[in-house]
Every structure is written in C-alpha cells, then in structure tokens.
Length: 158
Image (cartoon, rainbow, N blue to C red; front, side, top):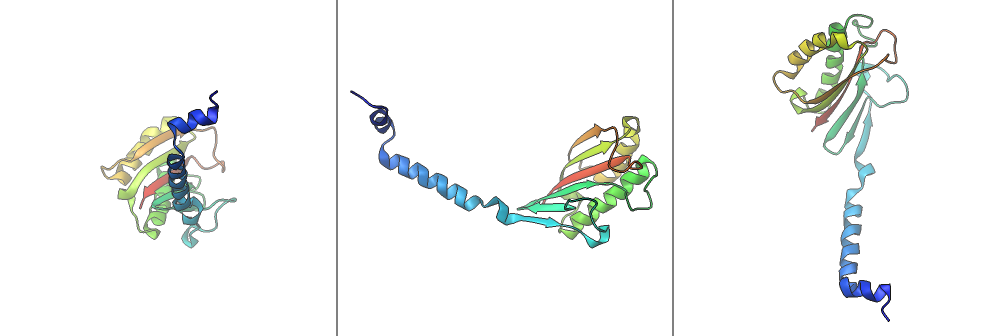
C-alpha cells in the first residue's frame, strides 16, 4: 500500500527537498527589507503635517509623500501656482538625495478640479522637459487643506 509520503519521495527525493529549502532560506535571509528603509524629513520643508515621513528611501528607490503648496506663497492660489511650488518641494527632496527629475519614475497627482487639468499639464511639461514618467491623475473631492487644489507624490529611481 502506498502512502502520500512514499508517493512524494518518489517525485521529490529527500536531497532535492533539502536543497530547495536551503535556497528559499538563503533568499529570505538576503532580502532583509527593513534593513534598508530610511524615513526622512527635510528642514527646508518644515515639519511634516501629521504622522508622515516626507520621503522614504528603500534601497535604490525614493518615495516622496504627497506634497502640497501648504506653507508656501502659492497656498490658496490657483492650480498652476500651487503645482509650481509643489514641484519645487519635490525637486528639493530629489536633489537632497542625489537625484533630479531625470530619475523620476512615477507621479500620482490628486486634483480637486479636473477641469483645471490643462493648466496642470502645462506645468508638467515644463517640469518633465521631454522625459515624462509614468503617471496618474486623480480627481478628489478635497485635500487635507481646504485651500489645496493639487497634491503630488513621486517615486524616483536612485
């Protein structure tokens, strides 16, 4: 009479199983995802609003939290002015980490009025300088601050 264990041994000899387990353990041991995470805030941007990090570096990837024009001269102004200030913040973070907008991989933009998307696109064309990243544009009912009309988060390859 054949048991499931005997059947498994016929297809997967014991040495093969040990090699497979060793390989899997080696992959997990080398991954150590938490060892490479750095959470950063930048003095030039002031303290973050809420319990966030302004950016997080994981290996060779930089994740920039959603930035708004809050605390800048563009606060409460139109989409173009706010977007310009947001890009200044994002550029400052990238440069602090040794990157620039050429390293931009993806952006997600949140706007409160999709009818203003053409104004945002003009600003984006100036920022991207012919090298557009992957992107998403999402209309939301409001952002954290009533006078914020655009929020942009970014991902950079370092």
